[in-house]
Length: 329
Length: 286
Image (cartoon, rainbow over all chains, first blue to last red; front, top):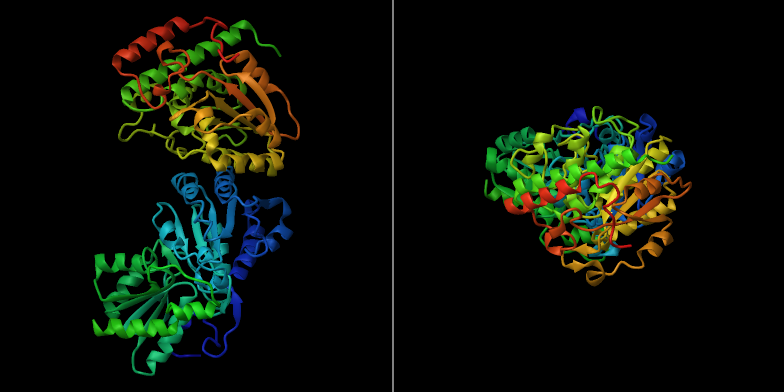
C-alpha cells in the first residue's frame, strides 16, 4: 500500500497498478436494490432507459415499485413529487442532460420548493459519454442543481462510492441530486471505505497544494499526485463527493495548510465544484486557485479517453494546473 | 342518493361565502387573479363541503382525499375554501400576498395546512396529483385524488404527458376537473391555441369524460359521484370567468386583476343578493 494514502479510507491496493474498471452506474443499480430491500417505500421511476440507467435489477426485484414513465422527464419529476408527498421515497432516473436538464423547473417547484423527498438520478453524466456528442454530455448539471435551495448534490468517485451513496441518500428525508457516468472507470475505493454525506474525504495527505476533485477526476488527481511526488511536490487529494452541502471545514483546512488549491471535475468551469470550493475559500481563507474543468465550451463526439485528454480532464491536466497554481503561491 | 334542496342551498351559500372571501382578499392584496377564482367557487364548495373525505383538524390524515390545484394562480379560491372549512383562521385571508403571510401569491406546500402541493408554473400540479394517485394504487388505499387544471393551462406539454400516463395506468382513483372557461391571458383559448375537440382528446387519452355545468352543484355532485371502474375520470366543467360578479363575468381583463375598493364594494353587494337563490346560478354555456 502506498504510504501517502490515508489509511482510514481503505483505498484499493491496486489503484496505481491496473485497477479494476467498473462503471459507476453499476454501483447505483446495486445500491438502489439494497435501498429497496431496506425500505418498502423506495420506488424507482424511469424514462424508457431501464437498462442503461441500471434500473433493470430493481425492476426485477420489485416490479410493483418500478414505474415506467415513458419519455417524459417533466412528468416524471412531478409524479415523483406526488409519490413523495404520499410517503414514498422515489428515485427518478434518466440521463443527466434530461434529468435535471429538461425538467429543471419541475425539480425547482414541485420538488425543491416543496421539500419533496425525491432522489434525482443523473446517469451518463459528463463528457465521458463520448460518441453521442455534446447534446448528450451533461456538463452543466452540477451548476443547475447546486443553486437550488433544499437540494443536496452528490458526485461519487467510483462504483463502490456510488453504491454506498445510493443507499445513504434513501435514508435522508430531503431531495438529493446524484450524478454518475456511463463508462468503466477505475475502482479506487473498497467495500470498507467509509462514506458519509457532506464529508469531504482526504484520500491523500500532502502539504504543498490541495487537489479537490469529484467523480472520475478523483482517480486522475491521485495519479497526478503520485507523479508530482517524484518531482518533490507533495499533493493533498480531497474527494469532495458532496458538492452541497459542501464540507467547508475540510476546504478551509486545505487552504490554510497547503496554501493553494486546484479543483478537478468533469463539468463546466462555471457553477460546478470549482466555484463551490472558491466560494468557501474566498470567504474564509483566500489562496491561489486553478480549475480543471470544461472551459466554457461544448463537447463533441469522440471516445471517452480521447475527449478527457483533449479537454485536459485527466492527470496531465491536473499536473499542469498544480504547477501553475504553485507559481502564484 | 339525491340531495335535498336544503343541502344544495347550503353548498350554494358556501360558494357565495367563498366568492365574498375572494373579493375581500384580492382587494386587500392589491394584486392577484379574480376571474378564475370566482368562476370555480361552486366546484370548490361542492368538493370540500360534500364530495371529499377530509378533516381540517387533521390535515395530514393518511387516507384523506387529496386535492391539487394545478392552475395555482387561482389560489384565492383555494385559500378561501380552506378558511371556510376551518383549516386556518379566516381573519388571515387579508394577509394574502403580504410579507410573512402563509398565503403566498402562489401556494407553498407546508406553509398552510391543507395545501397538498406548491404551484405556479402550469401543469406541474397535474403530474403531482397523478403521482399521489399512483401511490394510492400501490398501497391499495381507498383515498381519492382530485386535481383542477385550467383550460389555457392545457397548452403545456406536461399536461399531455401526465394524461397519457394516467390513462395507461387506469388510475380509477383519480378525478381531473378542467376549468373550461374559454379564456386565457391573451384572449379566448380557441384563438390563442385551440383545444377543441377537447372532449374527444380526453376520451382518446383513456379518460371517462363528463361534461358539466360548473355552476350547477347538483349536476357537479352527480358527476363526482358517478362510479367509474378501471379508468380515470375528468369533469369538463364549463364555467363563467368572474361568475357571480356581473361586471367581471366574461371579461378577460379580470384574469389577473384584483378589484379596487369601490369595485370590491359593488361586487360584495352583488354577491349579497346572490345568497340562497337556490338554483338560479346557472351556466350560460348551455
